[in-house]
Image 1 (cartoon, rainbow, N blue to C red):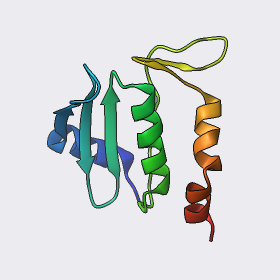
Image 2: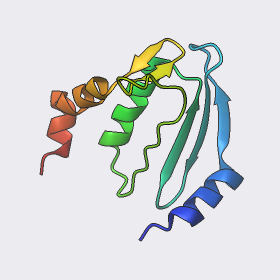
Image 3: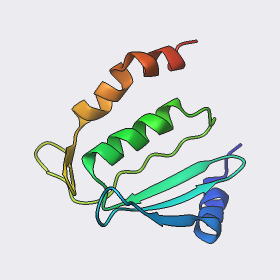
Image 4: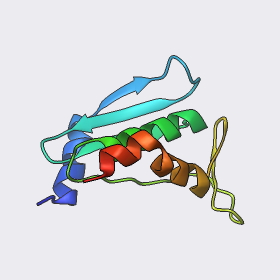
Length: 106
């Protein structure tokens, strides 16, 4: 079982922080425990979000937590990012990718 409260406490106390050399101002906070891998992107680009969502989906971890936070466009729900937006359509496209579909198939 995954006790989210315990896992988030581990994240807070043990995460590593890195700054992107490719995206100015982007920072990543990461912790991989026995039960849950947690990654927080601060000030990300649209490409970074798409890449990390894809990585999360295809990861073999049994428990996954995806939280979107930040400015968004109220009419469409798109997340407003440093270099564009991330929309529901972008999320659907990741699941529509053949490689992702093959990995998720039984």
